[in-house]
Length: 389
Image (cartoon, rainbow, N blue to C red; front, side, top):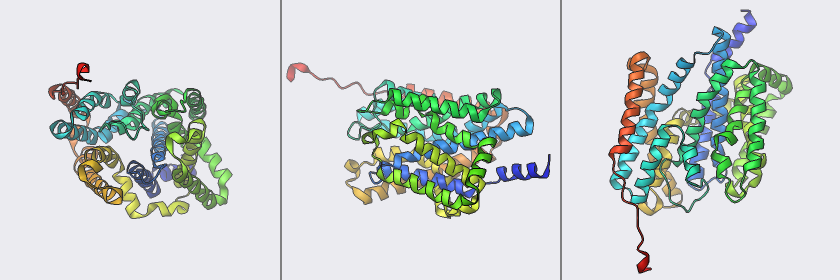
C-alpha cells in the first residue's frame, strides 16, 4: 500500500464530529415537525437515510478494500447489536404501558403493529391498513414512526449483498436511485402520498444517493468539482436544505414527490460527502450540544413519538411550546437512559452479545417479543347497535 493510500484509509476511518452534528439536526427537525413547529422537519428522515446509506457503504467498501470481501454474518451481527436492544426495550415498555392505561383503540393498533415492527415490515403493514402518514386528525399509533426504521433495516439486509456481488457500486446506486424516483413519480397519489413516502421501493433513492456519494469515483469527482470552493458549496447546500425544511408542507407540496425529495436527498448526500472530505468547512456542525443530540438520535427517534401520543395535549392540558418542552424533555431523558444503559453496553462492552451467546440472546429476544404480542389480550372490537341509530 502506498503512502497516499494509507492516508486515504486513515482519513476515512477517523470519527467525523460533523456527521454527529448532522444527526442532531435531523432529529431536532423531526421533533419540531411532530410537535407542530417546523412544517418540513419530516425531511430530517431523509437526512438520516442519506447518512445511513453513506456510512454503511463506506464501511462495506473499506471492508472490501481490506479483505477482498464482505462478511455478511459479521455485518448483520453488528447491525443487530446496534439497533435491536434499544428497539426491543422500547417496544416492550411502550406496549405494556399502552395495554395498562391506553384507550382500547390504541391498545388494538399497538398489538397489531408490534409483530410487524419486530419483522421490520411495519411500513408495508401500515400501507396495507391504509394508515395515512399525513392524517393529523386520525387515530394515532405509537409505532407508526417506525416505518423509517423498517426501510433502513430492509436496506441493511439487501445492500451488503449487492456490494458483495457487483463491481460498479456507484453506477448501481445511481441507476437504482433513478428507477426509484421514476416509480415514485408514477405511483404518487396527490390526495395522499403516503404510499410513495413510506414504501421501500419509492424511498430507496434517499439511501442510495448517500451510498453513491460514499464510493471512490464519486468522492474523487466531488473533490475535483468543488475544489477550493468547498466552503461556498457547503453553505449553499445547507441553505437549500434549510429553506426546504422551512417552506415545505408535506401533503400540500406535491412537487416533493415528483423530484423534490430526490433533490433534497441528493443535497443531503453531497453535504455528507463534503463533511467527510473537508471537516474544516463543516466545523459548525461539531458544536457539542448538537453532537450530543446526534449521539442519542436513534433512541430519541424511537421514544419521541410514543411520548407524544401518550402525553398528548388532551392528556396533559398543555399546548404550544409548553407542551413541546414537556414531550421533548421526557423523550430526551428516556433516550439518554436508553443510550447509556442499553445501547452502549450491548454494543461495546458486554461479551454475551457476540458469537454463539449473541445468537442465543437474539433468538431469546425475538421469542420474548413474539410472546408479548400473544400474551397481552386485545380489547374486543367496538360494536355499534344499528337498531338504536
